Image 1 (spheres, one colour):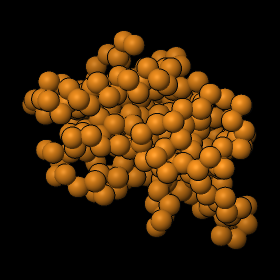
Image 2: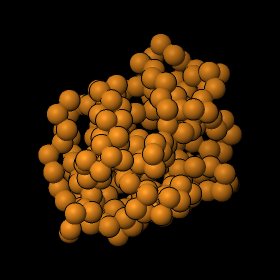
Image 3: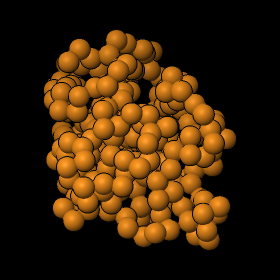
Length: 226
């Protein structure tokens, strides 16, 4: 795979959010300095809310329900928790073209391709970052978000990443206005909500195969020790 391979790590158990962010910031700096390879880190967090750089406090409807973290990624409020697969993506965009828009589209393609392997027809939406599925069973024009995207670039190295709802408790999203979208036609969903039962391990395998299609080859490695 050569020296430009991307490492791929999977953590088991719940990874504390603050420690994960600290690791990502350090790893991104090391990648920018040429001291570490790129890394994709798949993990699961305990229940929590995070607010991105565009978050509005009015969208935090129940601030006492779960811990709340203000974070430097783009976007608004989102939820992380059990049954949701988070993928933190630390890639060197200097060697990948320095095109932030193309990078985000690549993340969307990565998710869409992985979901297609499960028979889920998902797509991007103009003006609404993330990956969506049509829900005609809920009414005309109804769409649900199945995966969120929120990234940050520092010295053209990305960190933060994506979150796919595999089988989380969807009621946990009630404490926020997810991504600031209050339109009743737009909600959140998961693979389980769509009637597709997949384990996190099965989801990881689909993500790995799709990542190699979109971004290039990976090499599995041990997860970070926090």
